[in-house]
Length: 588
View (cartoon, one colour):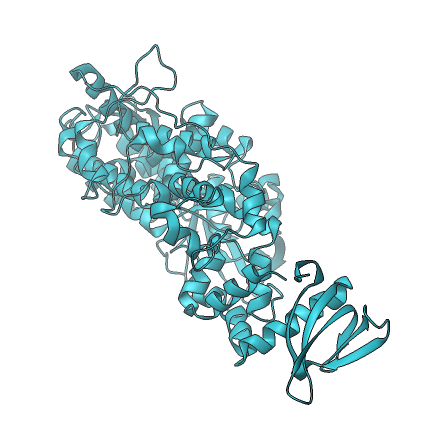
């Protein structure tokens, strides 16, 4: 045991629970750590492995300050933060040997200062705006696919290649790295939430999908800013210049990739323009609409809007069962139209195609023949062509042939249809085998399929396979289905709650007599090491005597050891020991 650990233990015991919990979080202490008292905590925090684990999390300023302190200088503005992290002693003095040893072998790389463009021409600004427009549209497509079915996550927490292929097959860019950045933006803004090894559309994501384009961009920028690591944020709530981002965690080997990903995301949002072509690592100049967000104010999309196509609220319906939007369709209209037609192309002018399957899907999701016609007549500049009316009527006549409800007696999901051949086809459909549908004959002789899988899951599985399914309640009335979203991120307990049990144990073990507790700690450590100590003992006559003991045991309130001077075994009550010190440090 060192005096560094004792000083730290005393300082830790004086901190509040919130301060201790924040320290434990930043030092990545496990809530179930087997510490019995503050001396255990101090020893663990000063352990070389714990110190080495903490160094990569330091900011540039903290790393520079710690190197200065190890060299005998002043840590400057980082002193408070380093003391809070238990990497500097609570008072002025030498750095703990474990900290000094960990820092001694680490170089502090030179600051990386890539070239930054100082000026922007109108063409560069326009390209940045177009990139932001494309990113928002791509993200909207990804969220819609996540609403149809959650995106599976790998063990590392990333979306795998098979899921990316599903996104690409549905029209997203054929660029796996770009998809990672776009999905990262969505997760950072809380539009997608990780739930049980999947990424699911959140309630916030469902709301975002219905915002107008500029509001979508502003909400996305706000979420990006809020998710930035603390080292990149300013006191005003904005962010430091992007050119400095790669420098902020100089001892973290993974930070370079992380910073590069964040800069790419900022570029996708149009916050910076392209850098010079002859400098691969250059960071482009800030775009005009990025300033407010960088300074901590609400993002302002007005400047961006001047460079992107205006959204439209009308379409052209054609006899070949297609719809043409002469510009970006308002998101709310686009979402509803895509619920009843398949989008074939996406650009400033998008095209959609109506099919029997797409209209059946719309009817299954709660639309009716009347509501579809009313919607199309409202937004169409050319009316509703007769071929489309006919196809809609035909789809409506078939809809509801398969009814999905709950058996009131057994509570199992029940699938029924007046068309026996259709029911048999569902029963043998290989795509529906995971549902475990079992044919059953009811008391009145009606053939049905039953399963233990919940009603909504069965309904959506049938709808996705293009069966004319309808969701019905206990009385047989058709219900409007709603795809589930992740309401919110699982509530994360605050630091104090996470470490409540550990903090309670440390507080309970705190001794009133810190000196006595420390002495016992030193003697226990010496017994384990069979160390040689110079022990100052209080004699019965009131005098003090120093004995040099090779410690052999400790327990029951007594210290046992061989006296080096007389070569006899001595047993000393702890209450009579005034102080101890390693024999090598004793004066001659």
